[in-house]
Amino acid sequence: MNVTLSSKSPVSIKADCLVVAAPDKGQWPESTRQVDEALGGLLGELHKAGDISGKLGATLLVPVRDQAWQRVLVVGAGADSDRTPANFRKLLVAALGQLKDGAAKHAVITLSDLATSNVEGTEANRLSMIGRVIEDQLYRFTGYKSEKAPERKLNKITVTASSTGKDLKSALELGLATGRGMNLTKDLGNTPPNVCHPSWLAEQAEKMAKDHDVIKTEILDEKQMKKLGMNTLLSVSAGSAQPARLIVMEYRGGKSKDRPHVLVGKGITFDTGGISLKPGEGMDEMKYDMGGAAAVFGAMQVVAETKPAINVVAVVAAAENMPDGQATRPGDIVTSMSGQTVEILNTDAEGRLVLCDALTYVKKFDPATVVDLATLTGACIIALGHHATGLFSNDDALAEQITAAGERACDRVWRLPIWDDYQSQLDSNFADMQNIGGRPAGSITAACFLSRFTKDYRWAHLDIAGTAWHSGKAKGSSGRPVPLLVDYLMSHVGQ
Image 1 (cartoon, rainbow, N blue to C red):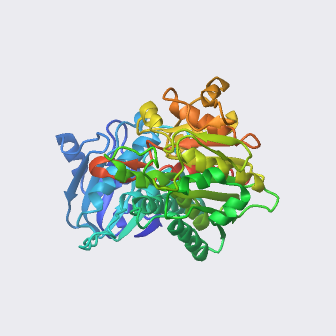
Image 2 (cartoon, one colour; image 1 turned 90 degrees about the vertical axis):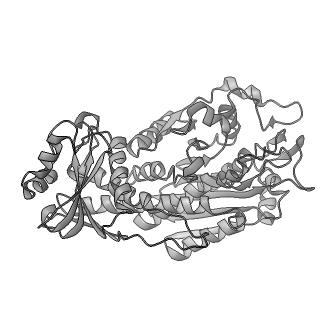
Image 3 (cartoon, rainbow, N blue to C red; image 1 turned 120 degrees about the horizontal axis):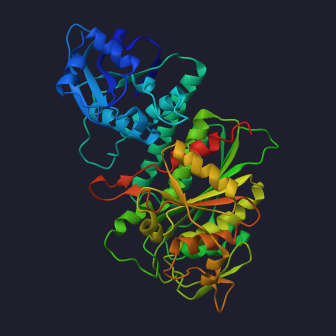
């Protein structure tokens, strides 16, 4: 998609479709007033007659004559006082929903001058969101269909702004890059598990390093992991014909002395549950159990494209969890890389087993912060549904930074506790700990397990089990929480 920024008056830009906003209450933005004036007050008349609604997300396509554009798409923008970043995103989604399969080849989006109700509702932030939603909403995954999908007519979008200065241009480019990062995350998640296995994921990391010379990639195989003592990670892959891989991607855009921010992704490319076999219904969605890894890839692509002045290291613990004669049994005890022993009571609680060794490994980077991402527990879906990601942290300031980033990015989190009170649920009669804590507070005890391996640095855990993918008719990876990660990382640039 060809996306450009223009400071020209929208009425002077030749295009097939012009997108303008109609607030429910409050003054129309300058761009809408200019278009209405060019049309002799037509939009005002349609609004007065009730044809144009200011209700958030409502749309009306108005054919016009004798203009530089053939039609006007009016999108309802709600009340000025209610136009949060999340609602601004909703009206963008509505507009792109009409454009993406419409007749227009070239569309002009004039929505960056539409006021938002929060203190951070700057034109730059709106441009960034516009860019992100363009890429996100135009996404399709059709590579495995025998009939090729027809190409969309829409191939060019011009976004209008008050200027084409560096700050506004960079904001739009960051949004577009974030959308592309989300789309990479969706591509990886949606790829079938007979293709997307640990070695294939490692190949994608090598490809990223080949495509972006600012990325350095290292792949550890099972022999190397065994030598390092990563026995909990290897216990998960023991029943699979696909060998595990530890994938390391480094970006060094900051000063050499700057400590890196580390992202750790759970990369279970398919999760049967192992010997603790899952029910068959819906098991196909367990290809999304590498959603944390996919989001790490997406965030690293954004970093590679935008080249911020920050150091970032990404580590992906990739394995396939299968039942087999060599598979780990409930009751087995393994020694983690940290030296702590784990009694594995349920082989379907495997994400924490691959993560704990990865979280021990990342100490070598002397990290400023560590954020792990994992589709870790069904209990998190029960607690928070599919709207918010579960957040756990051993550092209040870090938790506050991630929460603020989620609010800005419309990719929200909700913090849950990891109080010592819960740790006793992991007590084992035979090892230092067991890998499950029972049904009560399942997400919390999973995070408590991880916290035992993260005492040497500032750490946060994101449980994305409820937000990494959609089920039902809209089944597919969501691309979350790439926007959150990007905002969080960018907020540390220059610090």
